[in-house]
Length: 114
Image 1 (cartoon, rainbow, N blue to C red):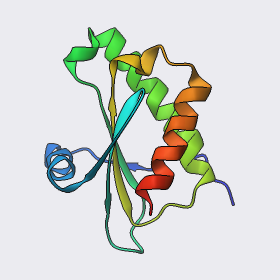
Image 2: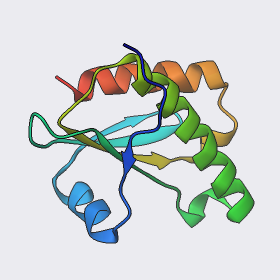
Image 3: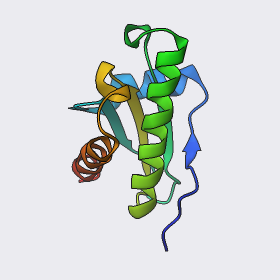
Image 4: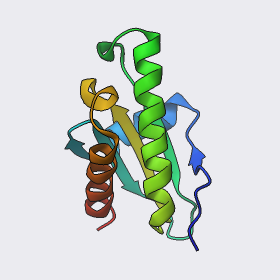
């Protein structure tokens, strides 16, 4: 069954720091993915971040919204459990064609889940 509901998200800075220290990093055009396996039966948890290098608050929010929507659509088609993911926006996130962003996300998730 395909679920397009958004997954659980990180809310604590400590979660982001833990992922930065121990997670596997995969850089793609448009984003950086940090992935780490957790307990096999644990639900999928994700986090999204955009640094000030991207631009002002409007630019950061636009990039983060595009990445969140691409992740929501892509993660709905994949059965990922027992994983924690952090998506970091890049300069190209806001300007990359949406289909390309989704395709890059799908290939990165396949690689991270292996």
